[in-house]
Amino acid sequence: MSLLRPFTFIQFQGSPRSFTRILPFRTAQFHSSPIRARVLPEMANERPTGLKATSGIELLTWGTPNGVKASIILEELKEAYGKDYTWQPINISQNIQKEAWYTKLGPNGRIPVIVDHDQGGFAVQEGSAILTYLTRHYDPEHKFSFTDPLDISRAEQWMAWQHGGLGPMQGQANHFNRAAPERIYWGMQRYVGETERLAGILDNQLKDNDYLVGNKYSIADIASFGWVNALRFSGVDIDAFPNLKKWWEKILARPAVVRGLSVPSRSPFGNDTYEQRLKDDKEFAEKEGTLKKQITEAKEKYNYKYASP
Ligand SMILES: N[C@@H](CCC(=O)N[C@@H](CS)C(=O)NCC(=O)O)C(=O)O
Image (cartoon, rainbow, N blue to C red; front, side, top):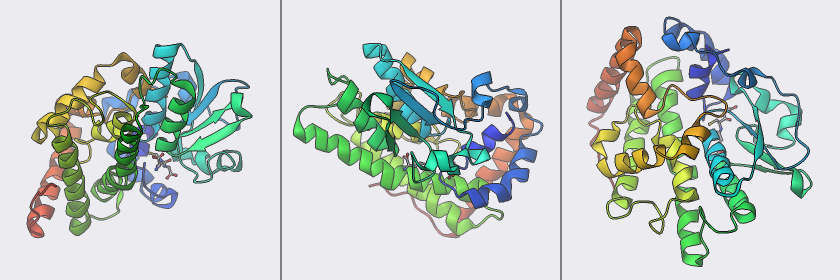
């Protein structure tokens, strides 16, 4: 199933219908890649049919920008407080997230979802709701959250911004760049442009601050990190946003973040892994070069000009 993984990565905001349609194309595209041979850890190949834990937190997830919000905070809580958790891989290319046992827990049929067995099996869907739930219950020293009501509001604002802006826009950029059956230049420049604008908003916020809220690494940063980590893959040059790049590097240097990014297995489309692959895989580099050219043409065709804010 390692073949499916690169593909599923681009599907994070898409519909299962479009997913099925483009599967052969993506599979073919990755056929000659070294990543083809990458075998997912045995656990990642499991096909869950229900919950497996009886106590603590159980995470149902896949290694996408939304999925890693949950695995990163859980790894941080584990490191900070020794709070362990259980996870199961929900391979979204197999539509496990649409099965009845799953949608009973996460009615939206998307990952991630957590279940708190110590709260009577209480289930939480949506990345930001998961981040606030977990810190409210399991971050007693507020290492990743806030006590000041204004900082709580600031964090909520950045998380809402991620849910309403960065995630959906970047997800659509990926869809139009890679998943759509035809190259629609209007859609490509619209969503790559929006993603760039939003990257600029983060860059501006980080000009005089190390982190998004209160100069402290928190759930506000974790909410956006997975998406920023995939900016290159989405056709956005992170080097053009130096404050954001510094923030991304600093967060990526945290051991808990690296572990969180590896649940169920490390994505080949992080800014660093993507760059490495361009160097290692000639065919991949050629295809990505073509895509980059198309994005530039799309921007020129519609006279796109970067502006942020
Ligand atoms: N707003 C949600 C978005 C969740 C989402 O779109 N998840 C994607 C993976 S990144 C998914 O499950 N896609 C599979 C599908 O569309 O069926 C969040 O932040 O948790």
